[in-house]
Each structure stands twice: as C-alpha cells, then as structure tokens.
Length: 167
Image 1 (tube, rainbow, N blue to C red):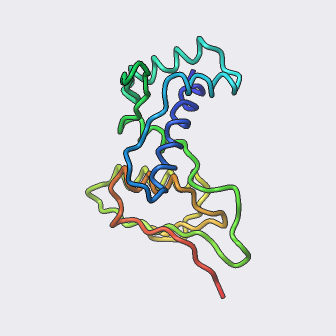
Image 2: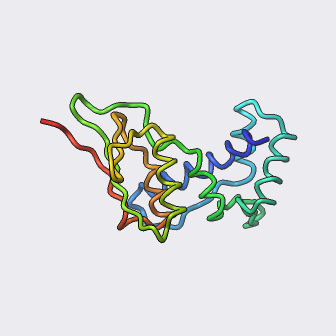
C-alpha cells in the first residue's frame, strides 16, 4: 500500500512541479480521481489497492477530495507535499558536460534545526556529496523538485542552487 500511496503522491506532485515551472500564473487544476485511477491501472495496480491507498492518504490528511461539476478532484495538502518531497528525485539522471557540476549552498539557522537537518539528509540521500559548511555538489543536473522543496520550507533566502563550471 505504501508504494501505491507514493505513486499517487508522485502523480499529483509532478503536476504541481510542472505548474510551478511554467510562467503561466493561472490557477492550477488538480487531477481528477478518475484520471489518477486510470494512470494507476495502466501501471498494473488493482482497484482494491488504489482505493486503500486513497483512503490511507485521506486519513493522513495528505490529500483532500473536492467535488466540482460532478467530478471529484484530488487536492494535495501541505502535509502531502512535504511527504512527496521526502522521496521525490532531486537530481535528474542526466549529467552535465565535462567540467561542470551542480551545487547547492544552504544556510539555515540553528533556530530551524529540524528543517536544516531534514534538508541535509535529503540532499545526501539524493546523491549530493558534502564539500563543507553547507556546500553540496553533484555531477548530475538538479531537478525542478528542488524548487518545490525550497518553496515549501520558505528557504528562498537561505538556499542557493545552480551550476558551476571549472575552466
């Protein structure tokens, strides 16, 4: 059930990240219950597992069901977005050209220790290597999911991410 729940959060989370990447400031349209079920059935998950996972996510308050015009949409809550960020990929499989790397510099105060520790663990788990005092480096490209993580934890001022080349 945990795998099915993570797949549901991934479906919704990826759509949120795509919307954040666009310059379009229109209101985000969450996926319908039927479209999520159809995507999961294509992936080979049976109906009982889907229903159980949706119930689990709703009970944990990771998602909410809303009805609009005879369709049920699944809304990702802030708690659900944090859960998605815990397992989403922060690095893309593709690598930079020779001599270039991705770098993330974080500077989170002692007052926000839990956020700082979570961020450190998450970056190391994603495949970054720790170079010293808040500097993390990877040869792979940074995913857009890092932007979602930054916005969720309001780290715009405290986190710097980018690419550097040694020439």
